Amino acid sequence: MKITVFAAGSRGDIQPCIALCRGLQQAGYQVCLAAPADFAEFVQKHGVSFYPLRGDVQKIMASDTGKKFMETGGANPLKSIRAVRTMVAPVIMQMAEDVSAACQDAQALICLGVFSSFGQSVAEALKIPMMHIEPTPLLPTSAFPAPSWPIQRSLGGLHNHLSGLAMLRVIWLWYQPFVNDFRKSLGLPKLTFKRYYRSLRSTPMLSAYSPSIIPHPADWADSVHITGTFFLDSQGDWQPSVELQAFLEAGGPPVYIGFGSMAGNNPEKLAGLVLEALAKSKQRGLILTGWGGLRPELLPDNVFVLDAAPHHWLFPRMAAVVHHGGAGTTSEGLRAGVPSIIVPFVLDQPFWGARIKQLGLGPDPIPQKQLTAERLAQAITLAVSDSGMRQRASAYGKAIRAENGVDNAVKIIQQYFQ
Image (tube, rainbow, N blue to C red; front, side):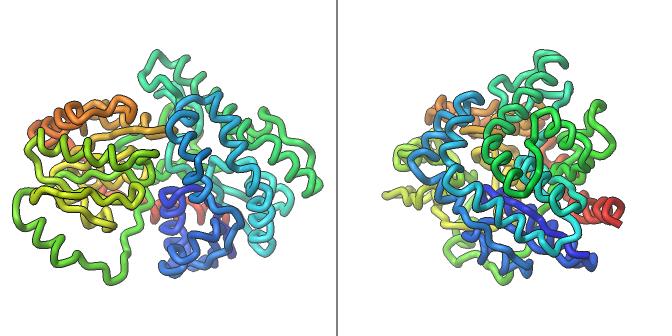
């Protein structure tokens, strides 16, 4: 059986899909991952068949419009509608056409839930079954506020459920005009929000996060399967440099600090703030330079700058991890069993920050706009010194390491598609 998996977005969106594709291949499926062309090398080095989609999403997010969205528009659901439409307009139709081409000889489609309206259209046109993947909860529930909703504290079940409906409406409005143009090209009738929502709820969902972090809400259907995270651990022959190994052995575990591509327009200022916070907290630090190629000058001896390293290798060697709260990085921090300090920028990041705090696995999240050296230093001090927090983080890490999200997902896929 041949399955096409459709994913787009950042590396954090693509990576779990690669892990799932590898699991499906080992189970005997023929699998092709359809993703933006700039991920070709990343996908193919893991031995997964690749279908390139036109449209460089990373380039879009690095544009002035993308940076502005990350700093402002992404935090406001209504403003995000125009911003997302502006960003994706040049590429979204080409990407949708390429997804359709990638599925021409497929017998089933697995689609990231946020792109469900396009996946639904392709599956409907080709008359093939479809499943969804979500790295962050997508369906409304009374159990917690919707990710990306501005209020990340529970104001009761009704508020939580309505926030989920509102955010789904926003996601629908991001893509509505493009989806219906695409459907017209496929000879399909227009899609309405009501039909989009009904299809989303009735299509089997692989929720790729830990049930110990988000238990299955009572108001979700049994077709929503919380499998555990899809971790991708193979890194070939990666080894730490002599300098990195020497730094780790020269003292106690350092504090990891990295914000991926979220550093905004002034990464130098952010670097200075981080160095000041490490000095105030009297902690060793390891700074990852994913943020704009940043290389802080005049580093003290207790700080090491690293271009890249696999999180599954690095995080267990840290005293705590400071990051932006993306779903993938959050899962890696949880699996490592160390406290997490979330500095959320936009979208689902405040949700994960609130979840970490609620479970006692890290200090209060510090929104990027409120980040100061003093607040970060206080959070670091708490994370490395609170024995209860550290014990809880260790226990959750042990539970998550015992899960196998990919194997669970493959078994579910076998049940639905066969």
